[in-house]
Length: 104
Image (cartoon, rainbow, N blue to C red; front, side, top):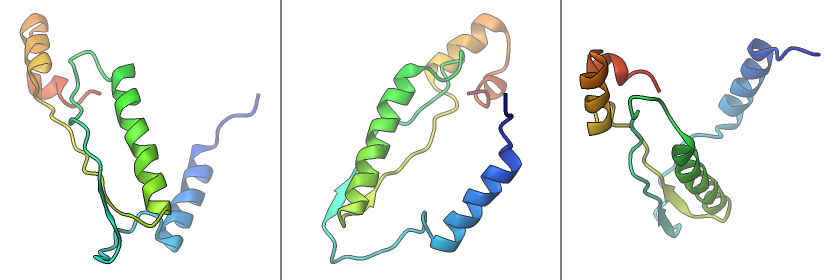
């Protein structure tokens, strides 16, 4: 079984993305606007789950499609590391919330 050579593969694509400015934002007010918003992900205290993937990947695909169709897309994403589920897990496990918040 061939092993995944992440160092070679990742660096290859990072160079391509940089050279071709794949992720460079542009501000072209002449394009139609598309705003995609999904709730901010937060670690539940037990990690990411399928619900996160379902919500974020679908809007990521739609946003990419809109960019390819010529839209000026805004798709903000971030995360709330200290949501209520994280706080509840911290109380139950005795692990500080700031330590749970970084594991997702």
